[in-house]
Image 1: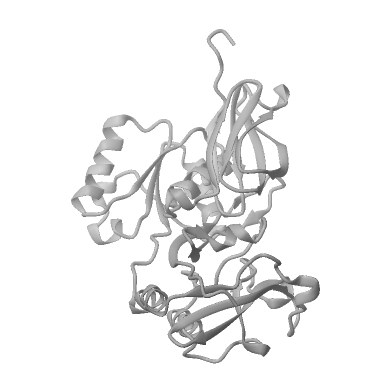
Image 2: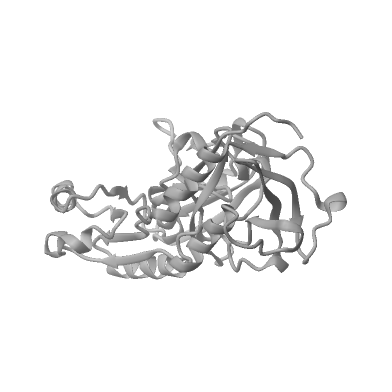
Length: 343
């Protein structure tokens, strides 16, 4: 086994939830990802819809036990010294499949090796091993410091959003959709009346289009007086899945250099997408007709290699007032469809 060291770190990440084009829901999950040699380990495992065991919504005792296991202070949960590195974001059941690896000590060092996709009690490395991934040798001090800080306690993500707008029916539907995917949502017309300790529980504030700039400034001032930095979301249109996507993006606290989906814009004929590594991207178009009815069309679903891509858009899907939402398993972006003057 090579004696070369890999660097080990941790970074906040999300599994993007949302309201899907078919009307279904995908649960939002906040978790801590493993960063190996400066790059999320998840990116090296093809386009995998999974989260690490270090998820923010597990009970504290279980979270601590997961950290202890990674430090080899607890027994492996699987035979042959194997640990779950990534699991199903919906249920964490091994039957849905999980990425596992052997974790062992070599003196002061920690080694992760024999990565595999596992759906049963024992892993089949010959059939389901991740060739070319690992082994990784981590310096013990760096490894223990990163995980030890996590165990000692870090601030939990603020997975709540405050909704402010004039269209109560839209706000109610939006709040229900957010709660369905695991994001808390509350509606108010006057943030100044909300106690400071409650404001500190929000990670984002979303404004409807009818809210004027003076009212928005007053709300943001209330958050500032409460001593909390909050993400501002200016709603693009009264379309619930579009607003959910905007809020999901605002709540993403992952470091920018470690995101996979980094750019989205759209003009009449195409959407321009930027990704940092090969991944599956789904693009959905939403438009409002003259009667303000919402029309939805999935316009692209495929694997894109790292770099910039221009994806053609069906003109019928984006005529009039239109928007696009792009999703990977970890990120989501939304953008309006802009038009040339006179277009």
